[in-house]
Amino acid sequence: MDKKLKTLVERVCPEVIELRHRLHRNPELAGEEYQTAALIRKTLAGTRIRALKPFLKTDVVAILKGRKPGRNVTLRADIDALPLVEKSGLPYASKNPGCMHACGHDGHTAILLGVAKVLEQFTDEWSGTIRFVFQPGEEVAALGKDLVASGALKDPRPDMIFALHGWPGISEGVIHSRTGIFMAASGFFKLVIQGKGAHGSRPDLAIDPILVGTRIVEAFAALAREVSPFESATLSICRFHGGNNSNVIPDTVEIEGTVRYLDKNMGGKLVARMKQLAQGLCSSMGATCHFIYTEPYIPLVNHGRAVALGQRVTERLLGKAQWQAAQNPSMGGEDFAFYLKHHYGAMFHLGLGEKACGLHNPHFDFNDRVIRNGILLLAGCTLEVLGEARTDP
Image (cartoon, rainbow, N blue to C red; front, side, top):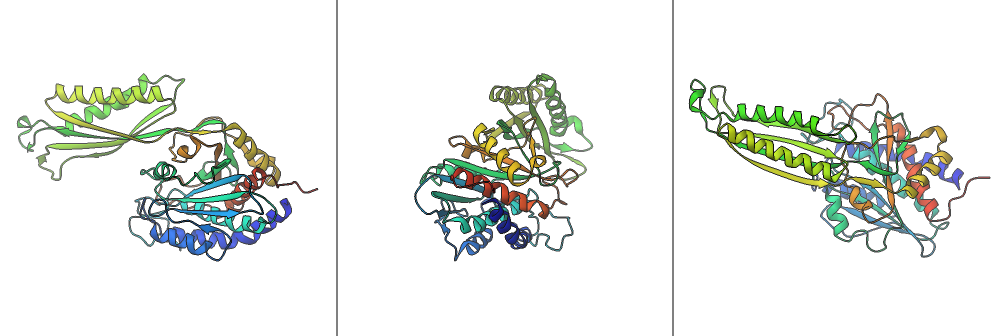
């Protein structure tokens, strides 16, 4: 079985890489992945894999049946891109201005299509069903929560569910994961400071929201001193905007950023202190503010049985050196957490290389050399759960 699996994966890799380049060339933002979904459906057409009607607008959920009824394994890939201008200079760089696959979702989608093509060749050798989920809107919109709530995973209910994410900083092709909290909860805040505008020559007539905003930024940075060294939480200011002219003090300033945490109590405390500090500083300087906070991502918690299975499959198919146990969670957010909230499963990081360009960077590109390992991991885990995977004698 393992020998056949490896042979099929090697055979399909060139096609999968070409698909990945097509996806990279044509990125689409969260909830707008119409061409991406059409390409996925076209790729699955003519196979034994049945694509269902969308549960949302641009998702593709597809079912592959085995020789008889049995367990279900669900595999998920995210398909959306980021609002970023690509600067990679690649021959297959984005053709859509201001939109780029800078988080590797083109690689995730291509890998899952490769897994589908490989597992279709095993349908006479396993029982049960495999659900392939190509999910829109992972970035910021967290549409994984909506897709799960829509009933996309209900019939049949998954016995195990898996996903992977390409990860810079990890050795090329290495599979990396851990039991328990693997990725953080993520929240986003927007603070609108209302002051009083004036001519730049008369700051005495203004309530300067830029000055107020800088004091709030300093206060937020100091909040790190209130986080215990035994806990993990981060706060980052990612946008500060005020004014449109060099000689006009504006009425308002907007500050936006993100909060990440592992423990719910710590996260709640941090957000409450942010709001308290912002309101207090504004009041002391004669300004007012409106604090908006949303939290679309919950902590991603891997199940031990699924992680152990991933380690076993990795060591068998790729070699012991290709498994790496994660010592600490990532502070990145991931809406696959909503899949794992009610189902057994795990997410794995797939190493893109220790010196690979970071995620959400305009120069980022998914590493085609690791696609083989990604397909082998997901296909191998699926076959083992379905009870028919065997080690070669």
